[in-house]
Image 1 (spheres, helix red, strand yellow):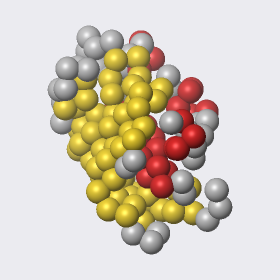
Image 2: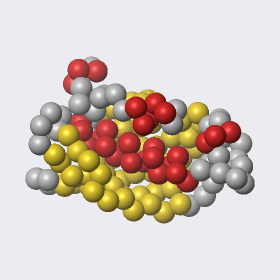
Image 3: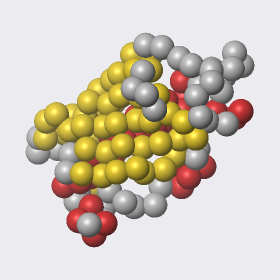
Image 4: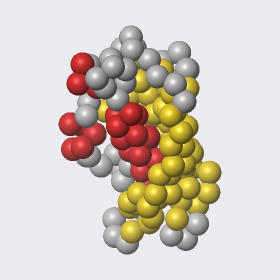
Length: 131
């Protein structure tokens, strides 16, 4: 049902630039994946925190837009909990925990394929007018 979440599936060039793809979209939930490459890593060989942050922010926006409204990020709070060197892919999940008139709050995580938690956070998405 791709049409059901048309606004959530808008092309996002920044995601493409960072090698992030959509795995699934459901009402109030999204999962994204990024294949890890050498440019995905920090100078210490671990996954760059900026990639995890970007994935979590994008996942929050996609989950928020499942109500077919447009949103922009108002603020983000992320706790980096762990990191890895030898993963082929990482995932981000966003789950809406509250919808208000103008602010939607999304719980986000970044994890490995086997479920190891890399980061946990909250993103407040601001609803903007227009589709």
